[in-house]
Image 1 (cartoon, helix red, strand yellow):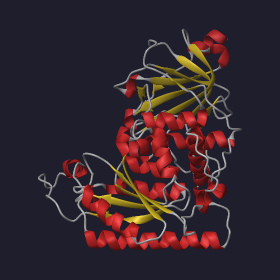
Image 2 (cartoon, helix red, strand yellow; image 1 turned 180 degrees about the vertical axis):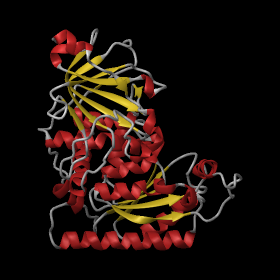
Image 3 (tube, helix red, strand yellow; image 1 turned 90 degrees about the vertical axis):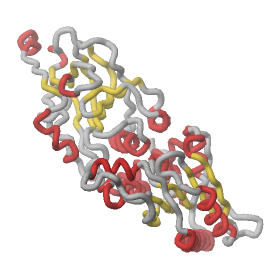
Image 4 (cartoon, helix red, strand yellow; image 1 turned 135 degrees about the vertical axis):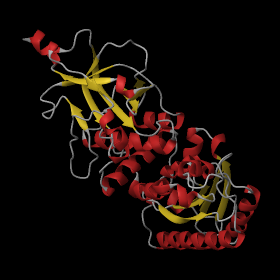
Length: 402
């Protein structure tokens, strides 16, 4: 009977080409024959073995890095695994992303649902991680994403592309294929609190009194950070932009300005800078993902190059969404109205790529008034916090739950 069950195992393509054009509509093409399990307030997931899989384990065959349709999956009972299959013991996380595991925001979006699942399941930690992009195997996370993952789960083995084409099956496996998916707002906040807390803990930061910082005159300290970037979507005149925010900061007692280049900072440097930030000023880009490390209720100011509004689609809102997920205040965005027009009329993709590589100008009057408004809001909020003797935001929001 075991031999018959073994022979009956049927491998199907990981990437179902029938749904390849609908990948943005839920990634239904990845392991398309299986339906997610949904629980209240949680992201959808697949778990093996389970009642839904009728006690069968998940097996994968193929390690192709260029064509997801060449990699396949099947379900098999533990006592009748496919011929030549290797059993991977322990818990395995399997992630498929339409985007890129090396990008900060996309990587965070892929990691977060596993953190949520772990919180709900006794803080379970995986033995390994298997990464797919459009069904194609990937063998590494970006450095920032890897550090964040290790802060939460410890050292992790990323399954690589070497090892031949023989099947490999998993003693236990959790599959996420929709990133945050249907995860509720309350659970998102708890997941981001845990990610923040674990990152700070991993980098040796103790911040229980962050909300009570005052200067020598007893005024609350407001930390304003400009996180710059080089190349595309950097400020055309970073010196002028810095000068505007420096002048507005100088008008507010207790305001401290810090200017950093995101690509000059290690992971822990980024955690440290953002932990001690109340107002985060930065052009649109992956470095904005570092808002994760600020206290809940902190403020974000975002800047776009010309043309982004017309061509970026939903992508222009990702950090607005993230601010909500992480408990921050997205204080709006400025879109540069000045610059060269796209030289590829009626070609949306080419214009998107053209504007994406553009740089951000500045409007001194608008920037000054905007900075003044946000600084005043933060100052009043801190004064209220101090006068009511509230516990610090950090104490309220980021106890390491796992």
